[in-house]
Amino acid sequence: MKRLSRRTFVLSGLATAGAVALPLTAAQAAVPFPFKLGVASGEPAADSVVLWTRLAPSPLNADGQGGMANADVTVDWQVSTTDTFSSLVASGSVTARYADAHSVHVVAGGLAPDAEYYYRFRAQGHISPVGRTRTAPAPGTVGRDLVMAFASCAHYESGYYTAYRRMAEERPDLILHLGDYIYEGGTGTGGVRAHVGAEIVSLADYRRRYAQYKSDPDLQAAHAIAPWLVVPDDHEVENNYANMVRNDSSPALTTAQWTARRTAAYRAYYENMPLRPSQAPSGNSIPLYRRVRWGTLATFHMLDTRQFRDDQACGDGWKVCADADSATRSLTGAAQEAWLLDGLAQHYGTWDILGQQVFFARQFDASGAASMDAWDGYRASRARIQQGWIDRSVRNPLVLTGDVHAAWANDLKADYANSGSATIGTELVCTSITSGGNGSAATAIPNVATNPHLKFHSGLRGYVRTTISPAQVRADFRAVATVTEHGAPATTLKSFAILDGQPGLRAL
Image 1: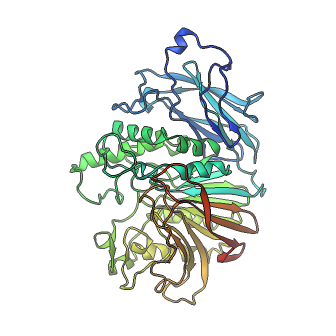
Image 2 (image 1 turned 90 degrees about the horizontal axis):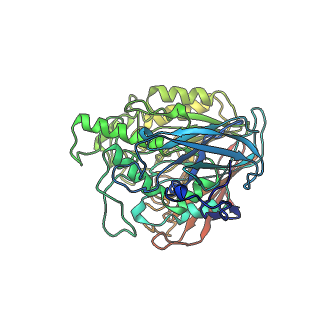
Image 3 (image 1 turned 90 degrees about the vertical axis):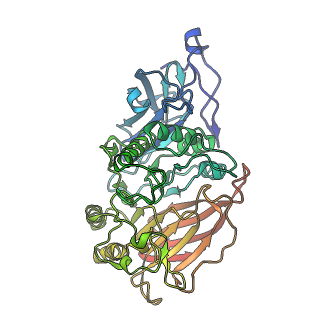
């Protein structure tokens, strides 16, 4: 593949652009640069990884097609061990289809385990930015220590994506995104930047909203630096929806229109994420709960806590609600719960990591009220899973959470009503990337008197960086001081260690 042109994109020594090696012909120069949404990789296995891009020379066009003509386009791809592509380990061509908004999902196979690679695409005479990715360790091997960062909740209007940039600069091995990658609302007031268009409902709307978010250079940097594992929460579809039940009637939709909206949302999510073909949606559902094994070091159980849940108890919100204790209520649905417990019983890795969306530990206020949208609204469901990992002798259960726009670190208890009860696991909650604006630097733990298992809290914006080894998980809560101004540095607010075989948090 000849190098024809590359766009400028430099990040922490990863040079993804350079001078034009050969001049464009007049015909090539007439074709606008199609890689304005960047590149991404995801779903790393020991021998393969998914490579993603989407062609969109005019990302914000109202039809959701990004300025592309109604025609399929051939896209070439390359994988190399160097960012100069002096030698290739894999290459090929794929068709970017108009019907799929010219998105592509390449499963690049035949790769070595526990290895770093670089990749790029070519289409319409242009070369994409270069991405960095890596594979998981071989089955039965531990591999290197894993640096994994996780994040959630990136409301575009609320601030700049500085936290994504800072995360990328740390060059993690893996990034988890735990939901609210986009927000569905229309143009608001008082934000530092604005959504394009009204509240999104149609497939074209969702495609354009993803294009707006993915046009952000800081988000592109985070995608280009490491493979991602992703799960959506609610705003990728509609705020606080539960299975096929809407949170409210705004905007007014018939049942058929709501079903069509959910169908469009899942389709656009798949089109814009580095997911394997096995995660492609079918109608108004999408198969997203899955396991990703990282050698014998860790197993990631990626959960879907929206698509199969019962409706929120007592009308949602913070409530004192006896129905939240009902044994029939489930946040995951019976099939996903059984799948999770079966996977936990396999003891594939030292660490069993649940990547999921909503607050897991109990958090009651002084009156006994709790969030009906979180696991507190599905207490029997939580109890079954916790007892399930106890019964299966899971050595190191670690729950990773997004959603709540604040950082938390929590011990998980066998009996939350008894402060002396055994600690049986650990929860790390990432704050938002931007949602909620700048937030607060206050670190007082809300409701700690009624919830002594809650060990840390911060309302600033950022992410969590973890270093996972056979002996421990180190968690660093990283934050930026402001998101309403661009470019703030990231600092570590608090660090904890979770030791192998000793669940619970140890402050560092």
